[in-house]
Image (cartoon, rainbow, N blue to C red; front, side):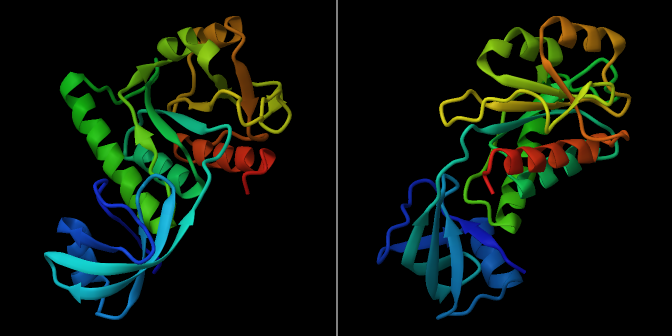
Length: 246
């Protein structure tokens, strides 16, 4: 199985330089992947640089490598963010994991009227940490050169109030237009596109009315109703294709 290893931010990936994997990354390479001296793996710096490197010494505590060659990848423009409503049974975590596999620049935990799951301040801190770990691990599995940031939870009202900073698109099966039809700014200097996914019960009537009143773009993904675990990743895939990121 393909796997990407991230070096810490103090190390730079430069051809010919020596780098080191430590802690969990070293343990995975040595114990799970059973890396051997002379074998090659892919390294990343979480900020868009990928490198092919050869192991020169391997243990569960430390893996020493020499960088063979380096690839710099450009970030998608405009950026794609996901506002994912909290959901029960791990469906929100499934959504962000798949969103990373598709490609996302930022993840926003979203609270909505019909969210069954609620985070107080303590749960929010733990939740953001857990989501960031899920995002990082999914990035390794998907060989994504950049790791999306997970920010503190936002309410729908907070995002609506700041809508002049983003291109907000709220997914809803009642929308007149599909995600492929609505107006969109796709130039490199366009503001980030933020896909908003409601909870299992969808947006409340009040939330729907506020979205419409604020002029937020509403879009549907087809004739049916998708689960909160699948709507975001599918929307991101369509946007990547529409913006010719792929």
